[in-house]
Structures are given as structure tokens and as C-alpha cells.
Image (cartoon, rainbow, N blue to C red; front, side, top):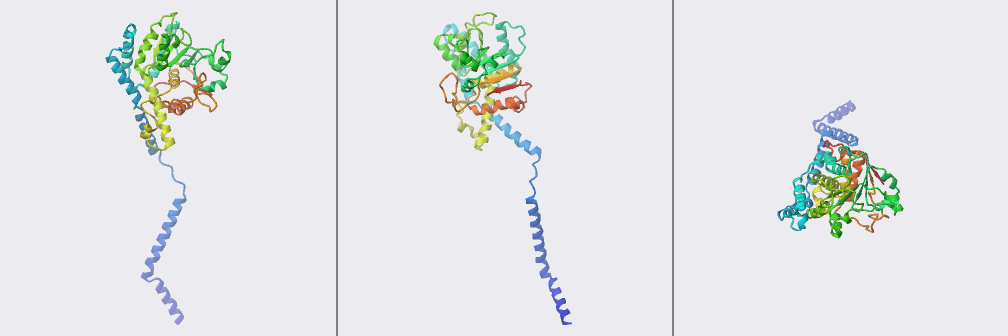
Length: 378
């Protein structure tokens, strides 16, 4: 009997209220720990698509908004307005009226409008067609070659391929090959249908002897130029004085790019530069200006030539864009360094999108313009 009493006594101790509460707490903590451990070992759930899209859209909208700020262009416009107020007094008397009119027209079209891409056939190709006597002015060029100035061209032999395009565009009077230079023709081709010059080049060559030195490819090759400085409307007036839209005229027209195209190119390049800055530094996009001198930042001549070609051609081939440690910066000069006012790496990212996924390009993806196929030969 004594043994049974002892067992009963011990059972009663186990169920004593003072023992139950600590036991329940211990069980609860054990279960909580197991649940937490199981949750921690599970793979994380994917975030819902909508919040991710919202974050991406916000980020993209921020870059696009910052891309619209262009201190360099604003400074050019302020200077242009002062020149117009002074009636372009620096212009020679016989070219002043033309310079003033050109500047006034240019200022009147200053706005951002990506839809200008759909008007480039009228703005660029039609004046050229009138000069050469083409009948179908609204037809786009079947194929265009934009030939850059990179030294990498000398390591290739694309000359014959370049010359097979309907229109060949060259930049800033870089030399083409010819019968007297078969070696260069093998690398860069010999044909030129349009010379693309920034107005700094136009100003320098006009200062030498009128416009004769600006027409590096001959009197009958049209010139397309964008205005880096409103003062250069004087040089444009000088070059335009000997040009005529009439077929068979002595000199081909000198066409100024539409300011809406300039604004589009500026925003595109700044967008890609901002995106690259954020990705590589981890810093906010608003700090981009600390890396780049905003008052000088600008797109390259080559970039605008490519965009212009995309507006007037059914197919675009691009040659001589890119760098190589062992190559010159330009194939025709000894220059090896880049200009600080350009972000070439950002432009290369734009070219990759243009070639592989044009639907991703900001400012153009929401417009009605359909980009043609673009191929970069390296």
C-alpha cells in the first residue's frame, strides 16, 4: 500500500497547477520556434508583379524627367535670343538677312516632340531629292550606311559593303577612299551621299575660304548640320549662298537639323547616361551632375547621324562606331582621347537597344514612329 500511495502522490505533483503553466509556455515556445525555422528555410515568395512594375515605372519616369533638364541647350538658346535682339551684327552685311531669318526659324521650332521622326523624310530627304532631281520625294532610302570615324575601321575591310548602300553618310568631313587611295577605300568605302557636320566644323572650315573647304566630298554632296552655337547661322548663310535646290545647281543644299530632333537626341543620351551612372555608382540619379559637367554635356555627331538615318531609311547599317585599346580615336587623325562632353559608353548602350530591342528605347517607344532594322558592324 505504501508503494501505491507514493505513485499517487507523485502523479498529483505532476498535475499541480504550479507545474502546468510553465509546461504550456515551453510547448508554445517550441512550436513557435519550429514554425519560424520552417518559414526561414522556405524559398522567398516572388513579389507581386504590380508593385515591381510601379517601382520600375517610377524609376524610369524619374530618369525621363531628369533627362529633360539640359543646361547646355538652355545656354545656347539664351545666346541665340541675344543675337537676334542684336540683329546678328557679327554677320557680313550681304549675309545678315539670311542669317537672321535662319536663326528666327530655328528658334520658332524649339520644342520637344519625338514625332519629328515621322517628318524627317520631308525635312531631310526631300531637299536632297529636289536637288538631285528625284521623282519620288516621299520614298525612304532603301538602305543607308552611317560611317563613323573610329580607328577600328582600319582593322576591317567593309569598304565594298559600305558603297553598296543607297545613301552613305559620313561625319565631320572624315576622308573617304578614292581612286588615289585604294587602301583607305578598302576600309571606309569611297561613296558619299550626305555629309553630316556639327556647326563647329562648319564654322572652322568656312573661316578658311568661304565654304569651299566645308565641301570635302565635292560641291554636289549635300550637307546636314546641327547648330551647336547660334552664331554659326552666319557660316550657314555663307555656305547656303552658293547652294540651290534646283536640279543641276552648282552646289548642293546645306540643311540644318530640326531643333526637335536635336532635343530628342539630347534626352536620349542623357537618359542612358543617367541610367548608367545609377547602375555603376549606386548613387541617386540627381547626383549625375557631379560626374558630368552639365553645362557642356552633349551627344556626339555620330549619335545624331544614326538617329537621323533611322528616320529616312528602310534599313540602316553603322560602321566605325566603337573603341579598341590599340586603335586611334579617329582613323584619320592621331587623336587618341575622347571628348569629356560626350558619354560614349552611354551612347553604346543606346545603340545596343536600337539594334536588339528598339521597343525599350524611351521617348520613342510611346510614339507612333516605327524604327527600321539597324545593324552595327564591328
